Image (cartoon, rainbow, N blue to C red):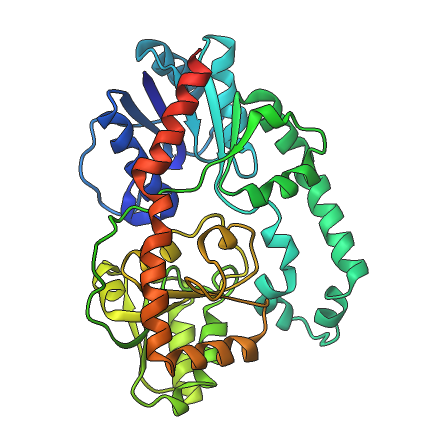
Length: 393
């Protein structure tokens, strides 16, 4: 089969999780005797290796430009594309663009929603705390936490995107969510969607499981973008503030970068926090290998690869139970810990208990490696191949 991945940005694995997963799946599909192409709206700011299968729409600043649509039609026709995988179905803009192909060919369209559909609004005060604190109304955050205003925000958010997700369901041959836990979120937007057209396929772990656990040091690890909206790295600093004095032989390494890194580094200095290192953008594999615990503080996620990647090396993940797919990866107290959102004290208590219990860490590290096998490229890739055959028939 001829498969075309469509995404807003160039498929540069170093740029983000969606790009990394797309590249990984594309390589697997090619190993299964399929031809794979990539079509993107914008080029990456990060220099990448030349990929002869990577193509770009001719007009970067206007998705629906006639030149882009014409180029897209010709590309699908000339390369005899059988299946289009839209990796940017969240929000709906790219879905409408991909649907144009239906008018000129019998191509099948798979729309993948790479995040929680409601996460941004369900945890609104947490993900927008920085902006809300700038408003000189201290009671506003308390009001936004009331059930009534939460329902109002949720209602308005659903109204805003209802038409887009209805269009996605009606004009896709298959809608792929990253977790069965997101089925209910989709029903908020499209209550009567055709269940035969919707399925859940997790992202594959891009690292191979080893048979042994590397030698570890007393290190807590964070890997990801550095921001205070979705990733909530500011909460990680507060957690470390409540724990580092009691654990003098432990350190915290923050791997990643982002617009708010400098602000958070200043906050570390202001609070006088010790044994924290901002490592910048680096290959996280050496850090997975040496760290005992991985901390995630996100308000919401789609399917965070970092949790599964850490488990490959027996690094125990701790995360807030704030998004549906986290339960697919972490079984509480077996291969990680799930913390009530966004209880810093409960996070600190759990983390401290684990740091003090070497035997528990060894047991959970082994459980991590066993549980992550279900996200291997062979297991996840097989589900995709089966889906292709069903659609082709």
